[in-house]
Length: 245
Image (spheres, rainbow, N blue to C red):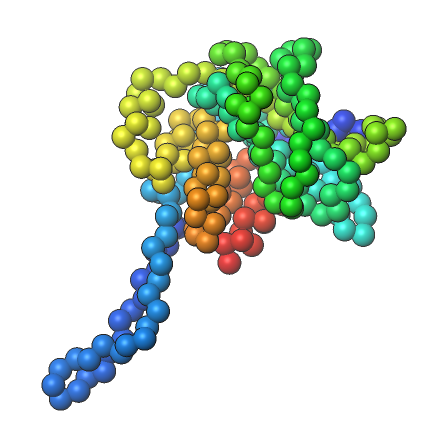
């Protein structure tokens, strides 16, 4: 499904340094002073997102960009269909870059009812997020919600807002999935969630690993691989690939 652009609403590789040595008459002498590679916290395997069978297509995902001397990009880290989560208080994430002038506003709707509308601090370019738990709100199971993040440049000209959003549905994890997650290591969880069709949980758990291990470039590679499996997130994918170099 093509990403809508609106204006107005808008492999893990573990590097091990080879041991260099000099052969001398008495045997093999290691060369001292070699810098050892730091262990990396790569996920257990390459992430493969398997959309749930009942993840119906939805025109809920909109990406926005605005031309300027420096292009402004605002993209939801959401699939082009209703994304699932096993958490009643999920984390919503988006990618923002370029000329970020103005303020951010987050909105969460249940049908036509707005359940949350709040300003969000405008962080530095990159992946940004909002934790629903911080607002003491929980999603109801089986209900489809629409969320959006808006970049407001002028309160008097809201038609010029840049808006990016997606759709989300909360369903409690099955007993089997709960068992897998309970015994999994943190680096194994993103692949488990992705394979179970839980998009938001896969992205959030991977982003949490990146926050804990910011120097681990393989984690950015993994997130880029995950985001590349849905349409319309090219700039976010490129951002993570650049960070992994």
